[in-house]
Each structure stands twice: as structure tokens, then as C-alpha cells.
Image (cartoon, one colour):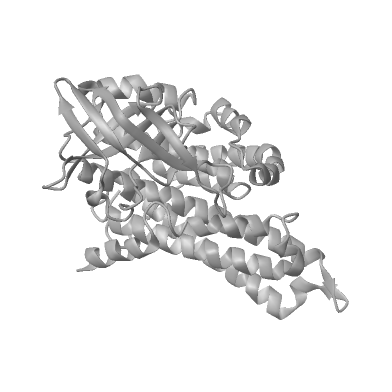
Length: 383
């Protein structure tokens, strides 16, 4: 398949369509009834993780040789979208399964792949990707966490921040400075039971409350050379290579949130009566719903196009994934806000899901690279 302008942007084979229907049914019947309580309790939904594992959904990020489905990025985005329609916190379980293992998938040794990937594909293990720090979010090269070689071991010291799956993950892929003067960083696998490793405070967040976000701490944590991913001085390229793909997870999550909010608001508008007829028949509401549906559809097309580009490893992948993440997240924030407006007072209370969707949507504009960073990536690609 060519990638020239006018070529087929993506195709959804019947296999993917069938899997989507299965995931949609699981999401609607099993996850949706739990979404409110997951948000209200702010507790990690272990039962949902088990459900996703039992149905091979956690195997989506992985190749068949490591026990995964081998279906690629487009199918992963489709699945993330379906789960996010009903529960963004639950969709993040799948997203982090990709984010936390992608450094190993793309840059790891055969031994590292065999050691970690099959057990992640079954859901036995859950990973985390520890890049951000209190003073090094959008500028990873300025990080303060260090890794110093000591014989055939490395000693890690520092603190990370904003790390998804903190306290849940069985292992962390940690980015650390190996040569601060020359701004060199490396990637290191740190298992949760290593001496000196701990998890500090967990953040109290506006949204995605069922997914813990916290601050892993490394105090003279020793790891063997076997836990170094790739070249310990070329981790920045590793991190950027990972993020240009994993931001598609945020895009797909955003599309799911937007579609879930649109569907709920549309159904509500058909039932809510004012001035003797459903509010769906009032032009002001009808046009708002039409814009919500259209913008969501456009965001989906761009996200699927970029996901297919990731599967084909296209040359302009960074630009495409940044555009997908930027547009989809902005659409999700706008659409969920409009959904609250359609429901009026009911949209503002937690008994109805759109206020949760609005809170959850905000983070899609921030994590996996803020939308301001996405605009930098896009503009540089245009230069």
C-alpha cells in the first residue's frame, strides 16, 4: 500500500470489526455499570483489569510471538476508543499496557522481550513509563534523576512525577540522566521490589480517578546491566520514539470520550420535553448535537489515519500522531462541555455521566505531551 496523497488512508478488516463489536459489548455490559463507582471511589479497578485480560484485550499491544494478538496500532486505538466511551479510567489500563512496554518492544533486547512481554500480554504484569519529573515535564533532557554505572550495575537516584500506574505497576521503565553535562539519558527497567524503590504521594485529580498517578522515588536503587534498554546515552531518542506512538492512545481515548458524551446527550435530548416537544427538535440543541457528532467523526478519521501510519511506520508519523492527539483532545474537551450544556442542571451532577466525561477529557489535552508541545512538533515538521 502506498502512502502518497490520495492513497487509502486505512482499512478496517472484518477481523477488526468483529473484535470491535466484542469489545463494545464488554464495555457496555461489564464496564459501563462500574464507571460511576470507579470514579467516585477513586480506586484502581482490579476487576476490570482481569476482565480485559480474560478477553485478550490486554494482548492488543503485542506481537503474536509474545502472546499478543498481533493486530497492530489501529486495532489498539479502536479498542481504546470503545472502552473510553464508557470509562476513561478503564481505557487507561490498556493504554499504559502499551506505553509501559513500548520501550522494550521497540528498543529492548530479545532477553528483555522474552522476560516481560508475554506476561504483560496475559495481564499478569502491568508496567509504567517513568519520564516526567517535577521540573522536567515537557523538557525531558533536563531531568534530575540520575543513573551512575558501578561495575556491572547501575545506581538510580531521583524522583519522578505524574506517573500513571504508580503503585500498581510491577515494573517501571525509568528515564534517567547518565551524563548531565552533555544531556544524555538512558532507559532502565526497575522492578517494584528493588531495594530503595518506593512510591510517594498519589495525586488527587480532577478526572480519571480510577487510574493512580503518583511519584516513584529511587534511592540508591541498583539494577543489573541486563535491565538497561538500548544505549544508555541515547534514551532521549527512545523516549521521543515511544511518545510519537503512544500519544495515539490519548487521541483514541479522547475520541471515545467525545463519542460517549455525544451519544448520551443525543439520547437525553430525545427524551427531555420542553415546550411540548423533545429538546432534540429545537434547532439550538439539534445543531449543537450535529456539531458534536461531526467533530467527533473528524477526530476519529485523523486518529485512525495516524494509527494506520504507525502500523506502516510512515516517514511523517510524528506529525500525524501529533495532529491526531491535538485535534482529538481539543474535540473531546469541547464536545463534553457541550454535552453538559445539553443536559443543563442534570449535566452538572454526578448522577449523570457527562460531568465525569468532561473532567476526564481535560487530561487528554495535557498528558502524552501537552497540546502546546504537539503544535511545536507539527510546526517543526512543516518547516
